[in-house]
Length: 450
Ligand code: HEM
Ligand code: HEM
Ligand SMILES: [Fe+2]
Image (cartoon, rainbow, N blue to C red; front, side):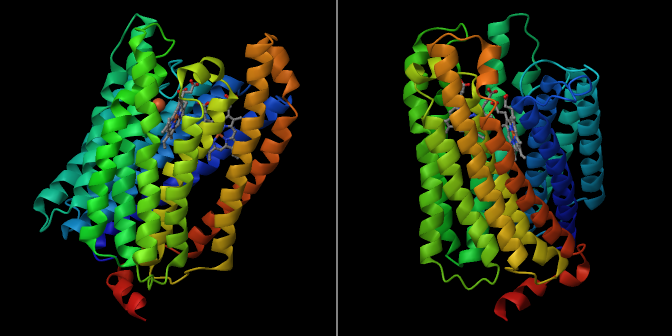
């Protein structure tokens, strides 16, 4: 690390890890419920568990993005963060709103809109919090000595993500209209502006880890941003097939969403090309493994598995089934979970000054979590395809089908245990690094040249 204020990133990452553990606990509750063991039903019914699981997911990923931004922006802009104190306040208040929301879900204080369950009054607190975050980032950039393309793309992603939160806050009495604008948040986040955030972080990591010239790396960023906007905006149409809007979306959604994997393919090719071109002298090999892994699994989970159900002819059958969960898991993990893990793996030794590169434990964490998640994806896929045939082709009743496919959730829970073991080992590595300290300032260069 080069600037004192970058240390704040560490606490965002620590909070993210904590919430990830909690997310996994709720994942297991649902995994067992799907197997037929729904013992907690009277306390935590499936719909509550699901809302908590997915909301915690979004919150820990956002904490990861914010931490990464607090680390990257000072270094790119060559300036300390304008206010560290405000950044800590922002972290604590963000967590408080998160805890309030999740507690509310257990007490039936929520809106039944998948991913946007947070009640509107709490939404306003989120808005104030995110404005504070953006204020710190923008002021730091403005006061800094430099504005790089990497910093700009990252910031642009963060600003757009904040703006796109707003359509989800408009009140509609009409179900179709509500659904229409809900997708502006959900889809345009993960298949639009979050890709810019991911691209920005990826570029920063590749610049640091491969030693390839910034100019070369940043040229790719333009291609990624271009492809994302070209495909992602009208690609929203793949959620408009059967929600009560015009038929035109069948064609628009089908064509443009089929183009979406190109942006993820570009990211994968970009990362591999930079890896091959680079000198790879950086000692943090594990951070490079996570970075390449991100680009490749994002293409697999989002690009390929997204494509698998994006045509209206297929989506008519697969919509809202476990096929969606199959894609949802590998896409969220491969793209956004892994980019956060890549960044933490890169930043921890720099923040703490402890040179724990490439430990056996860290490598095992990498393989167990990723193979575990691939196994989970497969289990969801098998359950999902079986569900589609039984429910939508043969017309068997929903509950009866769920019973038929219980057996596949044994595989899910086994693979999820492998995944969870990997995550716990990662967190153990995190803990072993100790806390961030000022002695680590400037040490990075010394470590790297050693
Ligand atoms: C990293 C990027 C992505 C993430 C994190 C992601 C995640 C998700 C999630 C969580 C859902 C369920 C949303 C809901 O029902 O509320 C979903 C749905 C969907 N995704 Fe993605 N996705 C990504 C990229 C893509 C791409 C590139 C495509 C197409 C090529 C795609 C195609 C779809 C389709 C068609 C659905 C609707 C499924 C249904 O009808 O139930 N996704 N995605
Ligand atoms: C031990 C780990 C986990 C288990 C056992 C687990 C299990 C589940 C289950 C059973 C569901 C509900 C499926 C349904 O609606 O019937 C679900 C939903 C979901 N989980 Fe997980 N999960 C785990 C970890 C994760 C992780 C690490 C991520 C992301 C990085 C994730 C992302 C999601 C998403 C996006 C959904 C909603 C999918 C959809 O909209 O269809 N889960 N999970
Ligand atoms: Fe989408």
